[in-house]
Image 1 (cartoon, rainbow, N blue to C red):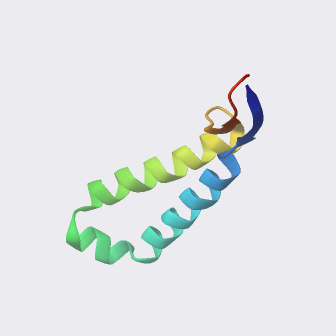
Image 2: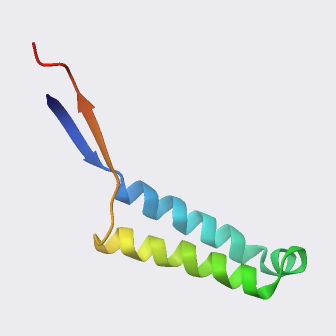
Length: 69
């Protein structure tokens, strides 16, 4: 039996935004370690996922369940 549910989207948005900001703040170092193509791909992924979670197009849910007796 489902007792409680919670969307984790707001947490995912916050985390993805923080990761993107951290990567952007070290852009030059990231490009030197990999390439501009890899940096752009990661930024596209992080910011795109954040937008999709924020808009409700994707989500992850937490469920608390207990056995039915």
